[in-house]
Length: 117
Image (tube, rainbow, N blue to C red; front, side, top):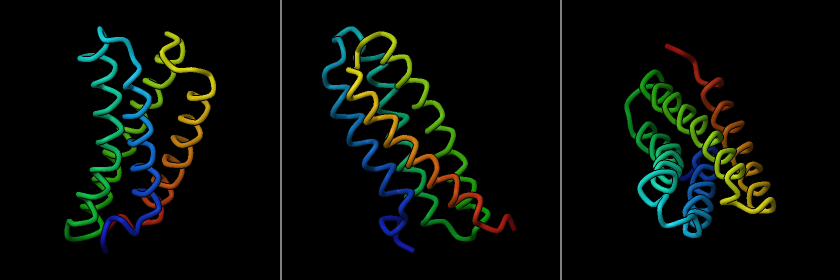
């Protein structure tokens, strides 16, 4: 099945686009630290769903979904840290957390719904 048809991928992709947009305004000295890490984690969440969808078998796809969930966990902490450092406005943080929550919930549902054979 093409990865674009998965709601989990659609939400992770939307989250990645938002992370890229918001991190443009992070301080320049965070370019190789928090900015890079946030973008990498957001990219990884969507990319692992895409890669896993192209693998043969449910077990292999679940493995990639598991990696995606790990990246989403990392990203959630990065959002919190960026908020605490005041790199993200409360409105933008709320939007990111909302997107993250939906992406995480949907990816988890996809992972849980697959038979672990």
